[in-house]
Length: 233
Length: 402
Image 1 (cartoon, chains in turn orange, brown):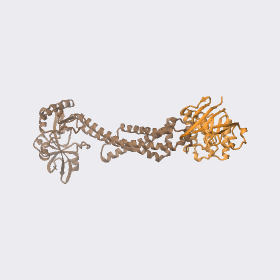
Image 2 (cartoon, chains in turn purple, brown; image 1 turned 45 degrees about the horizontal axis):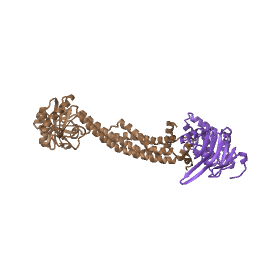
Image 3 (cartoon, chains in turn purple, brown; image 1 turned 180 degrees about the horizontal axis):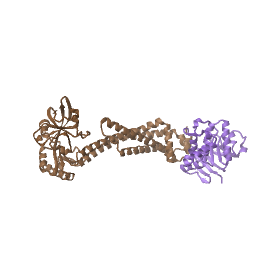
Image 4 (cartoon, one colour; image 1 turned 30 degrees about the vertical axis):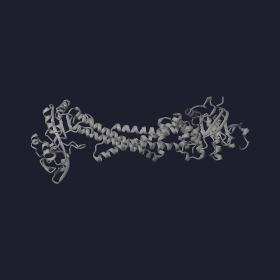
C-alpha cells in the first residue's frame, strides 16, 4: 500500500456567491521514498492539493489515506497532530518567526509534541543543515539561503515521513536554490518522501516524478526522464 | 505545550512590545491600587473606631434620645424623643447592679488661655463620668459630686487642649476661659491617642455649671450607664427600658430612646464602615473592568498582527487549544502582572495617604488576595474572545496573510 492514496479528491471554495472548484477529482498514489513535483499554471489547484496532502485542509469530497489512515474527515486538532508527527513544511516565504532565534524556530514543532530534549534535537537538526554556528542568530541576520536551511531544519526536526515544499527556491537566486535542492536530493536519498510544488522545470528536474495539474485535474503523471525537455507550460 | 513553556512564550511576546504592554497594564494597575487604597482607609477607620469603643470597656450601656431600630445603624425613621434630668433621677432610683451613671450634654466651645485660642467640645456631666467612660486622670483630679452640685467653675481637659493652650505643659491650677467664662483647670485626662471623635480634644465640666453658663436647659445628649460586670449588662438594659417606658409613657412600638451596649456599638460601627468600604471599593473596581476592556482591545490587535505567526505555529503542529492557551496566558499575564504592580502601588499609596493625613490605614490580606485573583480573572474574561478568535483561524488563510 502506498504512503499517500487519494481517491477522487474534490475541493470547492465558496467566495460569496461564487463557487471555485479548485480540485476536480484528483486520484493519486505516492509511494514512500518518492520524490514528486507538482506543476501547473497558477490557479490550477496545485497549492490546494498541497494543503490537502499536508493536512492543513480537508477535502470537500473524496478520501485521503495517509499511511493507511483515512485523514480526510479529521477534526482540526487531529489534523494538527498528524502534521506534527508525520509532515514537515518548507515554504517559499521561509515563514520563520522573526523574533525567535534560528534554534528557537527549529524547536517550535517540538514544543507541540512535548519532546523532552528539545534543545539537543533542534541543535542537531540545525547542525545537519550546516548552521550549527548560526543557532542564536535571528532570521533577519541570516541570508535567504540560510533562512531556508533553518526552515528545512525545522521541517525535519520531528523526523517526518513526508516533507512538503511550496516553491522552496522561489525566493532564492539560482545558485542558492540549487544548493537547497541538493539538500532535498540527499534527504530523498535517505528515504524521506519529498513533494514539492514548483513551476520551474529545472527544479522539477531534481524529482523522480512529475504531475501536471490543469483546472484542478491531473493531466499528466510521468517519471522524470520523460518530462525532461518538454518545455515551459 | 506545557504551562511553563507557554508562560515563557507569552513573557517574550510581552517583552517585545514593552511600552504597549505597560500602557495596557496601566488600567489594571490603577484599578487595583484604587481598590486597595479605598479598602485600606475604610479598614483603618473601622479599626480606629473599634479600638476607641473597646477602650470604653464592655460594661458601658449608652442611652440616647430618639427611638428606632434595636440593631444596626440608626435610620431616619426614629421617633423624636428627648432625655431629661428627670429620666436620670428615675434611673438613679430604679437601677441596681450599676457602677456609674452619668448624663452628658455637649456643646462646641472656644477655650482661651492668655492669647491662645482653641476650638473644642465641652462635655457637661457628673462626677461618675470617668468611671463610666473608663477614663483615667493623668494629672490633678476629676471634679467631685459636691462641686457638681455647687456649679463650680472647674474643668478637666484633654491632652490636645493642653497642647494647644499650654504648649503641652500640664498646668493644673491655671484658669482658662470657656466662651468667656473663667474655669480652673483641676485635672488632665489621660491621652487616648486621637482619631475618630477625638477623645483627647474635649473639656469636661460639671453638668450644673454647663447648664448655667453654656447650654441652658437643653436636653441631655446621652446617659451613660456602667454595669457592675459584663454579666449583668442584659439585666441593666432591661431595667433601663422598664424605667424609661414608665417615665416617657411609651411602649415598645413608640419607643423614643435608644439603648445600646458596647457589643451593639461594635457591630453597628463594623456594619456601617463595612458597607461604606464595599460601596467605595465597588466603584473603584469598575475601573478594573475598564482596564480589562483595554486588554481585550490590545489582544485583538495582537492577534491580527500575529496572524502569520499563528499560521506557522499551526502548520508545525499547534492545536487550537495550544494557540488559545498562548493568547489567554498572555492576557492573564498582562492583567495579573498589572494586579501585582497595582497591589504594590496600593500599599505605597495607602501608606503615603495615611501618613500625610494622619489616618490609620490597614491593607487586609483578603483585599490583596482578592484583588490579585480578580485582576487575573479580568485577564481570563477579556482575553477569552481574542484567544478564541486566534485559535479558530484557518492555517492556510494565516499563512497567506501579509
